[in-house]
Length: 540
Image: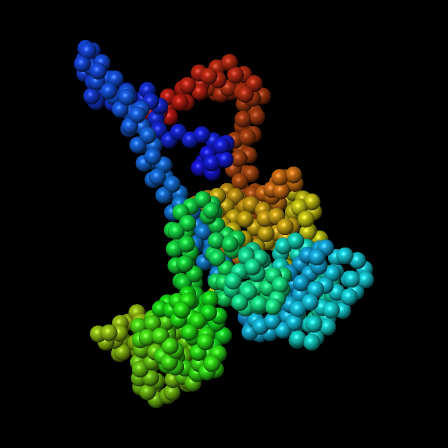
């Protein structure tokens, strides 16, 4: 409503009519019908219209704005968290493509660490000769860099480029469409210029697309969370509160996953608890000067990283192939001693204990409870020993859109298509079905039952199956449904008896007394007044 008022489409009046308000005041303050009463009435009318009414409206607007902001921020933060925790493909040799028609497709090759190896441009959509050259280039790059996966941005020419790449029949290579929202923001940012000072923005954007496939979290933390393509009215809410909430969300996501100390960028290190931009930069500088960290203890040698920062951050930092196997896990260095004692009591080593589930089952955590170490912490330690350094994110699954459905004009009502949830709001979920225009699944179409909160049914980046309900090509609007056929049949059956009975009543003339067909409006006003009276009685 506030957006409508801002666009001068609506006019909001959030107060009762002045006559009703004055009647309430007169009942409280005016008695009798004399000159004094008339003066009091005039004072009430002036005081209400000049002072009380504007003050009430201002207060109500502030309160409703605050409530709306809090809800919008909550929705945005939840969506951002789900997107940050999307399933990663992991370390692979990736060829990434930022698609385009006239300007061509920018192609980059990345190694397992996400480092840029080579970049070029192909023009598969501008002519037959260029198509052959594009085919040869892609095959040559895949062979040269042992490419394991191809990431294609889902923007302009994305589906066409995907069809071209799939038509090459590249054996053993996974082809994935990647959401490129915010990639252009990153490519023009200070972070991108620092990483690739000699490359243009198209190369930087393609690199971002490829890295998102490998590890969405590590790449998305480089972008302002407001630009990653999720949320509900984020530009209309209190920006300070929104930023604080999003920062908390990113910190929570980063710490939940953990950070590989020897490969992490300074951007993701800055979100680790206890660290910040300054200490993150110091860690990267120390790593560049002295080589990879061999254990967590060596973190203490980083300039200005004191004991308190080490205590807060150490448990969230991982070191692959470390000297101490616990450095790979989420066990805090302060608790290494208790794990050593567990291994010693079982007559084995920590390495053997981590690799042997049967030995872990023999541990009785109650034996190790102390005044400083409680049972919940010990339970968490045992879970971590079972899966050291486990990633809480889901397993990556390759996804592809339906072939031949590339534009909104290719859609037909009733068509069933696979899609990916791109955004969630309080009124439904937006789903990308590969036609350059997301469709909306309204809350009433999310499931065969009543849905109060869309997040109970879907998550951002979830793969779903949808049915086309309505298509509005001029306005570029697509209505989708996630209801199953069984649910739809049940809904139809539940409505059918009433509909049939109504038709029979109309034919036989046995309408109820208060039933008024739409083509007989002579008593409609009386019926409306009766309904309004009933409603007023309910709300009293």
